[in-house]
Length: 144
Image 1 (cartoon, rainbow, N blue to C red):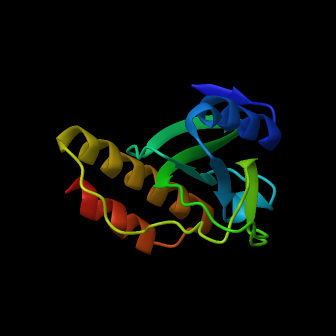
Image 2 (spheres, rainbow, N blue to C red):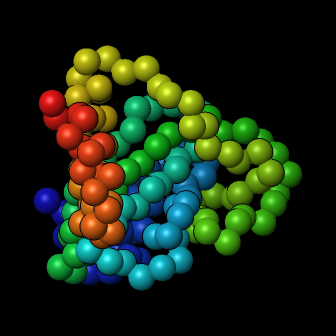
């Protein structure tokens, strides 16, 4: 299991691991701007020429348990643009064609299992952060 000293070292790890075959790496959401809390998740978007299936890792940042979720999207050239306030650019340049694709992907059996496990962990982390039982219902649906 990976252990990081702070958010900056997580960002460096992601950049070093994925920048070689990427044109843009960004973080979208609260992890881009807010301090790390226990059970937070890093939603990383990687834009490049080649699409890959999502990548997941559980890690510690100091003593806080976090989920790193990496999603891959096709990169489209465009005019340089300023990124949104809830986005942090780790590598590359943001442009006006950068938009995540939230369409459902197709997975083979092994990838489906990984995706379901990631969703269970993600919903469990959400429950631990918020104590909202709706997140437990989402877990229950996946494990029964």
